[in-house]
Image (cartoon, rainbow, N blue to C red; front, top):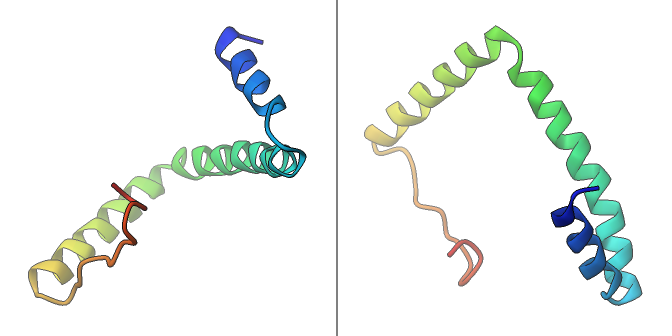
Length: 77
């Protein structure tokens, strides 16, 4: 285990039990999600699909059919 990961686990070990449980559920799920996305983007057709979706989104925006996100205060900044 590298030092950065070791420090992260040391910090997690100091959390209250409920937060440790939440972290313990989050980490494997996050790793699995990353694996799934990596697998999806490994296919050449994924690039074409993403390019089409981006073009559609830009077209919608340019046509005035989009709205700004209403982010909660502090959530994204």
